[in-house]
Length: 387
Image 1 (cartoon, helix red, strand yellow):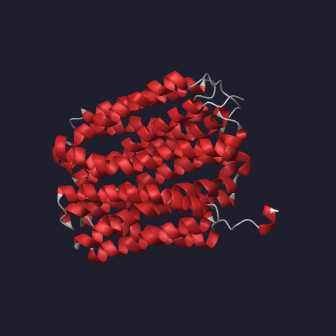
Image 2: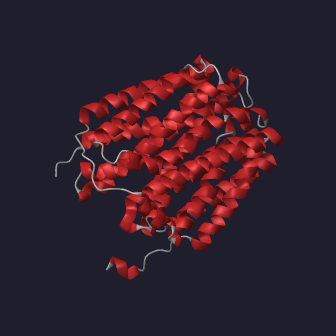
Image 3: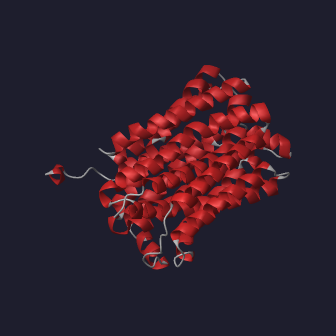
């Protein structure tokens, strides 16, 4: 089969645009809440709306569009991303912003759930791992760019400018997909029976429960990290941008470290990331008012989070190697439910006890998720498998 690297690169651009748009509110939260006249916790539900809708869209869109050419489906999802950014940039109220984020959730869930399956059709099987690495690099770059650039643009030109920039990126991604993606007629007949069968497998259920605990804990802390830096550590706007840049750089290198570690044991990779974030959340609770503690803890938090996407992807495929695509859809749904849970739980804690509510939620969830992973996570394959 022909190798279509430009088409794979277009999926990378799509993933980059989606993740960038999803993560922007965390770096713009206080400016958004002030402008829209709502609390930080209420503004944080912009993350919740995206995640909840993404959780529904991830397993359902492949079913609803099973008779449509995948090229058309991906282009439609990319256009939704463009529309979402435009609506967010012009939102005059919280309901308008939440509507924009609902559209983002549809695009996010559908795009993510089908990207791996499409990559398998764009390159020969021997190059699939390399293609997925390229696509996932869009996540790494977005992780580095979204928070610090969003914070900087929000400070210089206002929070809406960050969504305008995200809209420009999404337009470029859409045009590249239009130019490079070939016709991709639907294959197979995905159905709800397969998803139900997967959920009856204990290893799949354990993996999804670990996702719920660890990812919700991360997003309870990450979504409300800016209020903590401003109201607890009392960092200047320039320092906030610098710390968020450190978070992004930490996440970028964390992805590579986690990839190396997960190749040896995804259980230990995930547990190590969870244990480190739990320790950092405890440090923020105990000494977050000291600027140096926050300035060190946040970049390390970003590095630790890098263990989760790589580790959980490997775990879920090992849990269901015969239904990898369906398991991948459930994983995306699990991630989005966890993101929503973290944003809601963290928002309630922040509104009730202040900016340290996010780390408090994270400490409990991370501890439970790490213990679950250590006890029930996948074990390394026997050495004889290498023979």
